[in-house]
Each structure stands twice: as C-alpha cells, then as structure tokens.
Length: 293
Image 1 (tube, rainbow, N blue to C red):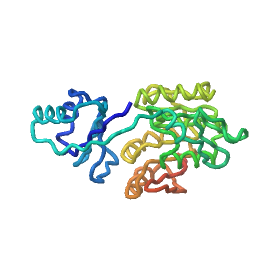
Image 2: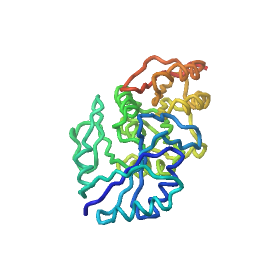
Image 3: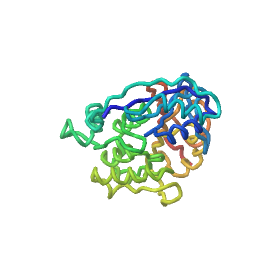
Image 4: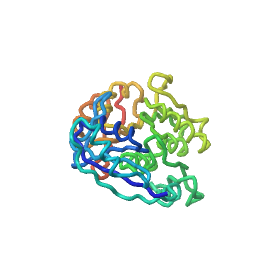
C-alpha cells in the first residue's frame, strides 16, 4: 500500500504540540530530524534537546484527504503552521531492504560481524552473529568499529572483561568469542540489557557473559575494560574505572570528539597511562593501561 509523508519545519518549542496534533489527526508515526545542520552530540542527564529548526515527518495512508487534514491542523494549532510538504512513499518489503543493506563486516585479525540471515564469510574466523535492534551497536558506527578493531588486534584471552555501556552487547560478544574468561556487560538501559542477553544466547556465549545495570553486579578486578559511551560520562566514571581495573590492565575509551580529547585524558591521568589514540571520522578512541597503585 502506498503512503504519504508529510513534512514541516518547526521551532523546537512547537515540536511536542504539533507532534501530538498530527497523531490526533491520523498520523501512523511521527519522527524528528535536524533541519539546519545543528549537531547535538552530548545532551545533559535527563535531557532530550531538539534542534532549533526541527523537521517533523508524519506518515499517513495515501488515501487521506490532504485539504481536510490541513484545515483540521490549522484550526487546532495555537499559531499558523508552516507550509506542508507532501512526498509519496511507496510500500516495500522493509525486512528484505534491511537484509540487502546490512552485510558482513571485517574488523581485521579474523574478526567479523555478520547478520543472522547470511552464513559467516570465513568459517575459520571469529564471527559475532548480530542483527540491528533497539539497542545501540552493530559495528557500523565509528566509535564501535574502533573498539572492535582494537579488541581484534589485542584479544583479551583468558581475561576478565568489563563492557561498560554495552548497548547491543557487540563488544561483550566479541570479547567472549576472542577468548575472554568472563565478561561483565553493564548498561543503564533495560532494552540494552535484554538485547545483550539475547545476543549472548544466540552466539552461544551466555555462560561467559553476565549482564546487569550499574550496581547490580558484583564486579571483580578486571584485566580489560571497554567503555564506548560519550566524553561526559567517561570523565565522570574515571574514578570508578580506576578501582575496577587491575594494575597493568588495558582500558579502551571510545565516543570522544577531537575537542574533548584533552579533557578526557586529564580526568584519567592520575591512574592511567594512554599509549595510543585511534581516529575514525570525527571520533577518537584512547587505549591505555592502569598505572601501578
């Protein structure tokens, strides 16, 4: 069935009200995107900022009467609405479209991420089977890709590993498949914890991955700690990471923009010695070791 996508540009303060209005008048879904190239890299705690100019896209069945809809919206809006832009959207097999787009990815040293609808490209390689889902982490984002390459280059064989901010569990899964003795996957998002647990079962490593929220698991001293989050949380977590990592243990911090590099290093300098900086697009990852106590 064909659809219509109705788009309009709004000020941030109008987005919530107009979104509700669109849904009340038959929109099947409403999404927001940046209309003026204004990146929002790191919101504050409990904040969900919007762009100053936000593009709202609403999906409607093609048979909707546009004139009636626009009249209803104008009648119920607190202020005059900007012009509506209408685009036809043809129906398609979205599952098949996703399957064609998401292909196996090689992260070097014999580590692959592969979607479940395809066979592993190299039967002798280390392969994590993973499909996109609700939790962050498929290997396509630069911050995740850097961590996977660093893991593959320095496998945590027989190590205790902490994956802090695990998302889909992709780094925890890779660590387990690369020989980690035990992996602790930590996240504040219940959907991430559920995704990680399910992916661990699917990859047959559930016996070596423990999943929980911060404070829920009794974390032992680890030899390897991965944190693919953002600079603000990384800075705040520096003292705790110093207590979790054994002397000489490896730490990988990812999710850092170039102008945040010095602030992150400053927060860790008393307890960690960083030896390597990796860059992918606008993002950096730091690799280092825990200084002796």
